Amino acid sequence: MKYLLVSETVTAGVGRHVASLAEGLHAKGFDTHILHGQQRIDPPFLTFCKKFCGRIYFASLPMSRQISLADIQSIFRVRRYIKKNGPFDIIHGHSAKGGAIARIAAIGLPSLKVYTPHAFPTMDPDIGLARRMFYTCIEWGLGQLTDVLIAVSPGEALHAKNKIRIPVAKIAMVPNGVSLSSVDFEPAEAMPFLDNFEGIKIVFVGRLWPQKAPERLLDVLAKLGNEGRPYKVWIIGEGPLQESLIQKQDELNLNKNIVWVGWQDARRFIHHFDLLVLTSKYETSPITLLEAGAAGTPILSMDVDGAELIIEQGYNGYLIPNGDIAAFAETLSTIINNSDELSRLKKNAASLKWTLSSDRMLEQTLSCYLNKPGHIGLALADHSSTYK
Image (cartoon, rainbow, N blue to C red; front, top):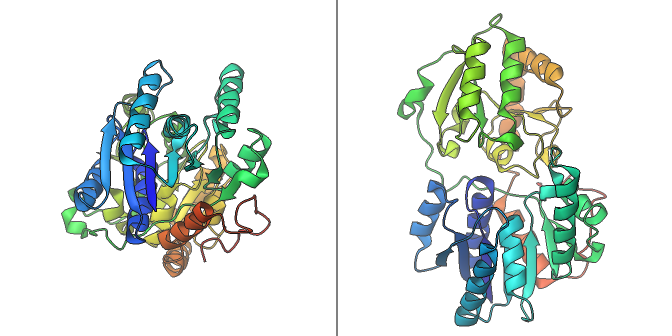
């Protein structure tokens, strides 16, 4: 079968998902093509391109993140690629922009048209009413061009059904999966920024922008103070909020507690940390949590969508009501200052590390493509064994 994957961004979680899916489909014998934007590309995806160059077909096209007249040109470019290299049995768009361009470019073609939102724009709690209505109308309209919408979390699937009004028969839920088998794990000595620190090592991984809400982490640390066992937080990521965050760090006198690392492929060393923290306002089955889980690292997270599939409350981590800074700080203080609690979480996290399979994600996605009876349609009654 011939398969085309379209995504404007191939960074962070979306990039990991795209690469994992394409690699798995290639291994299954699919003639796999990837069309991606030229601006948002990260080093892990470039490494993936080099590894599979000649086996998977890659092409980069100008695609803007924001809605603009340039999107019309992008649609025609994708259409030309389809005509030149097709016909494709499956055309799968990822994220809002890639999904829109792919489905419009495929109008009138017999290909199966698939869309994975990776969090609808309308799931942003800070989006204004006018923009929410605008994006809802766009997503509803594009839903008419969609054969299968694959949500990566229960909340995203329900959002598609209840807010975007996508017919249930078109919706499937396939949570993200990861595999660390091909990752070159680094010894602690190769990570100079760890600085041989002997206290509790905490890590935050994510782009420094509003969705990830890294300022919440600084508010949490301000409530902790410096009493109790020594700890440090390594912030892995870059983004437009970094300057204001460093200024806030200075104002809160947190300089001794925070290490700014910049962008790194955190998969290589996440196993060296005692705890991963996530403070996002909204997510859908976040890859960062999956990678921490697969590495056997305990997690403390705001209760974002999909996190409940990865974190067993009180077993391998804790979920905190989203936005509750005081509760987050209290739980973090307990973990830091109770060595038995931290040891228990780490032991339990290690026992779950191999249940977050990318192979499971691939097989469920294939079921969507092949439209096996009983798979398409919203089935959320019991997702407790999704990763088992």
